Image 1 (cartoon, rainbow, N blue to C red):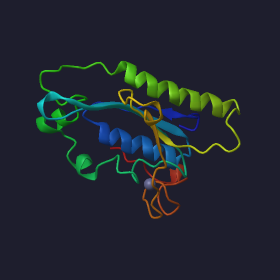
Image 2 (cartoon, rainbow, N blue to C red; image 1 turned 90 degrees about the horizontal axis):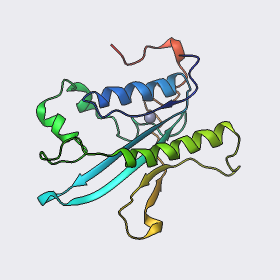
Image 3 (cartoon, rainbow, N blue to C red; image 1 turned 30 degrees about the vertical axis):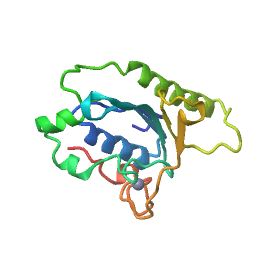
Length: 179
Ligand SMILES: [Zn+2]
């Protein structure tokens, strides 16, 4: 673990909640910057696509905790021997007739942006005034300025995962949330 310098990824499996919990813990406990990327196609009633987006969420000690921002559901962690209904809700497209929809290009947009961040960081090319943001890419929005949306993630002062009273910087002094 001490050789790891950057963590990236997300899972679409039935264990997504646990995977996010463990990666978020690794980042804060061992002070390893990382990034979470993903994509989603939202479908409303009648099968109408209401939104398509991909996301890039830099996660690092002091910035972007997945727990603080409710991207890890405690209820889901408790239930992660998933029921068929939960599996259905995790699908990229909420339509039983759509099997394995391709979101490769959406994930590629998010992944490319994450790699850019990483390369600019290690090469020292970030502007001195650079402030990280979580970014969402909405390719179907007709006007360009709204296609990329930026957010500053929340941070709870008493978070068990990212605060100094919690897991932050504990390294081998505390156990990871694994079995
Ligand atoms: Zn937190």
